[in-house]
Image (tube, rainbow, N blue to C red):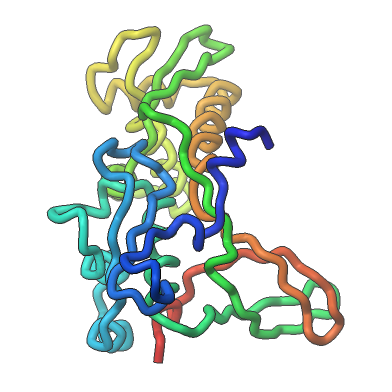
Length: 270
């Protein structure tokens, strides 16, 4: 890792600016965190100030039937920016905010069930969220280029926000329903819609509309399609919370690399 990349990788404790540095972070009324996208999605939004969950919000987790309860929960704990939508952020930012909200809202470490690959033991392990690493985007402009080898064309693309990804999925599911597609074909349709939505121009000439983009993407060779998808994935994986950690089995001592995930009881603090 070069010096520049080292500067962009830190742990959560170093990434946090507490309101009152004289008190323990966990008990701060509000906490300001730098977003992993680092202004890539919106140059004016590089950090978010969170407040701790209330007991009423905790109760809602047990009773809510709203499929978007997680988004509503995070939104309800954002102090600033005001008039701010999570849909404008990248999914990596949203995941990061989930872990940060869990961290500042409970003095208890996160518990997760782990499977030992050596002795098949199932056990609970603690995740110390402050020890997870955060990578910040180095990109200043949300516009990227990739040369498609088979077509010999240069395509520009942008990174999609949470809201744009949801929009693409809605478009794809409508198409799938109209075509009476299977679940597997629907998944493929969603991918095609996302790739179509993200591309902006070909050889400097903007596409006419979404249908023009969709037609272009649908006609790519497998090699060019994978090249474009890989470029997009490389950018999105260059920033965000690294949720991987090492867990030691208490039965046999084997060490496994596992990934912290958001389970149904992730925010249930009591």
